[in-house]
Amino acid sequence: MLTLQALATRLGGVHHGPPDLALRDVQPVDSAEAQHLTFVNDARHLELLASSRAGAVLCREGDDVGDRPAIRVANPRLAAAEALRLFHPRAAAIAGVHETASVARGAFVPASAEIGPFAVVEQGARVGERTILGAHVVVGRGCRVGDDTHLYPRVVLYPGVTVGARCDIHVGVVIGSPGFGVEMGPEGPVEFMQRGTVTLGDEVRVGANTTIDRATFGATRLGDGVQIDNLVQVGHNVTIGDGVIICALAGIGGGATFEDRSVLGPQGALAPDATLGAGTILGARGALQSHGRLDDPGQVYMGTPPIPLADWRRWVVLRRRLKRGKKDL
View 1 (spheres, rainbow, N blue to C red):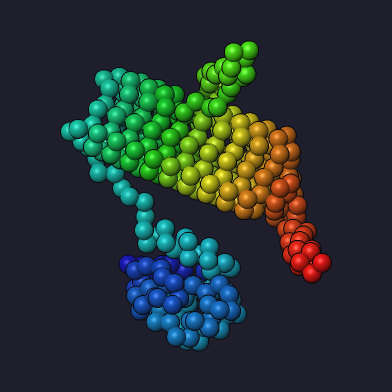
View 2 (view 1 turned 90 degrees about the vertical axis):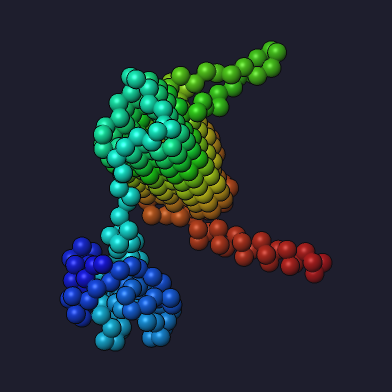
């Protein structure tokens, strides 16, 4: 439970209503109950709020929420996301090594870590303080895993991978598998050995069943605060800056670069050696060709080749008109 006043302080907002009002979770405006905090982000939410049973609401200055207890903030949806983290803090490690786990003699596992059933920590690996390794996790030889990181069940770190502090690596993720380097020889394809590694910064989230390939030489690098959705393929020697968002089913070719706070939408693609500039957004199913570059902070691009969102919308309308015109011929 958190009080209205405590939440306002933590969220940087101003509360109106009983400061000691106890709240226990965040719920949508149409399903919230008296013990819940909700949020209104647009006119439709404000309409629904009139019949909502929510105990308190996150809203903007000037929003008419009647006499309902409220916390006024600049961005209610962002504040709701932060409130959820307060109500549901990350899982704390239950210190100990499960009897079925395998920890190599030369590995380092601190007493504060939680090592789950059938997890494997190989020779020379180091696990951070209060880190959680779920069931069947494999931490390969020479890997480094930072403090307070959570590797969910069946995560595999190939040898030599580094994962920072306070990361969440979800079920089935594979980090450090060989990149896809192939040269065509006179008798067929020849594998170009991948001898590099992968490094992840702090507070990185990697969604379920995503794969991140090791570099040919050097490292595939992810910065701090990167957010990767489920089922994403990150190729060898990719560089991902701080605060980047990559949505589900994206495919990223070797050597591509994401500058800080760029965004790639669902099923988007960066071909080898392409660059998505700082703060630039490439929307769903958009694709950037090899050695291409988009560098327009705050601008949303769509399509293949990518064009600004406004132009893409005009193109969609024009295409529909042309199709109708052909039917009339």
